[in-house]
Length: 221
Image (cartoon, rainbow, N blue to C red; front, side, top):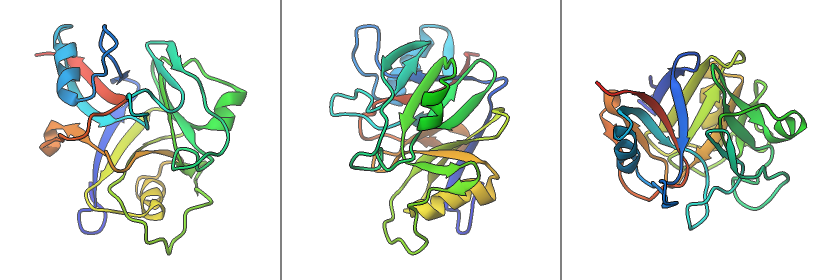
């Protein structure tokens, strides 16, 4: 799916049926860091990676900056309040994966009533909050980067992952989720290291070692 001059690559997932997971380290605690290592890990289980995307901001050692839950185990706590950088440009939020739904939830709302996430990653800023663009986004901004993010429908059934093909502003990116995709909530995942694995789009991006990775898993043929 594209907006304008083929600006965005879009992957849509039905959370009611898809196996959406987060990946960070192998059994020895070594960061997986690349789509290829995630694929190798899954192959040992008789499964394969159908889709992958970098899944939130991380420190130099690849540890998540904010909340990180994998297979129900919290490995990093929720971070609240403003801080320097995109992550702390509040409101930020959490991408929470449950058994038959997935939701982007603003951080303070998440803190007030934490859902039982099987997998979760915190990032920021929010792109769309209950149908409104982040209040700090400016239409006249000249700050353009390759950006990627995730948005969810109100009922949690539809998950849409987006990566821009060209540098875009936060305002343009948020508007795409809200106005073109019709999603009430969306979360920025990252910019400089934005990467995607999507065989139908002929994308298997290489480059920077990643921290959290979001993957859609299926049984191997």
